[in-house]
Image (cartoon, rainbow, N blue to C red; front, side):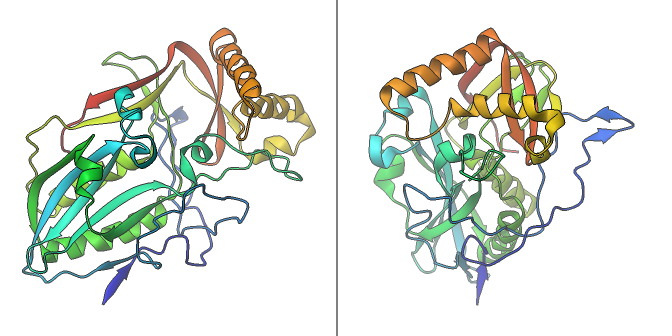
Length: 329
């Protein structure tokens, strides 16, 4: 018997789980709740990955069932983003990727579980310009990947591989069921955390939904199931912040279909054009200058969340990558 994660290989239809409750008594709720779906939607063939998603995982995304009385070690895993290609280069800027490892005492088998973008980070952060499609086109799904083995060198050389606890096989099996549901309903990757300022009392406008958030959700579920987790090293995680005043809601893809919002649609597409893929070096330099002008001089960032667009009135320091300690839930 195996549990299925139902990721990209399943033919599924997408419905929203009702409307996200983002207003109470006419007042906007912050942060805006992340919107889940009933089922993972089909992947459009237009979206192509530079590196295949979950290449060594089970083709159907299945997780093996453990014996109820097995003892399963739990490991905290962290390594620089794209370490397999660039080594520790991004690690020097504290741009890290997080995952969880498991080891069976009964069988001696180890496993790695992580959640990341189906089509790489750039595609999840900015859209494509697609011929014949009026709105920006997003390839922003993320999913769980579970596969045999823990690559010790990959995680330890420039990052972290630390045992943080033990659970029973029965607890692991319950966790697998939870992962299945979480993976099927939380499908869209969100790169940015948006806050009012860097201070301790800042308002959070939007939360990210990325690899580290999946790890935190998994830790929280393990603790709910009765696990005891303890790290002997600082539990630091990468956060990418945008700083803005109160966001202004703009609408969904209908912005790009109505004559009344033609100027807004043009401005949004012009903004994202600066971040388009496959640019030459000269084009990239020009695009960075355009992005600087929009974000810093005009103090505007068009933000996409829950398949809707918001205008962020940007504030100093505008953008920041941090590596901050976040304790277990």
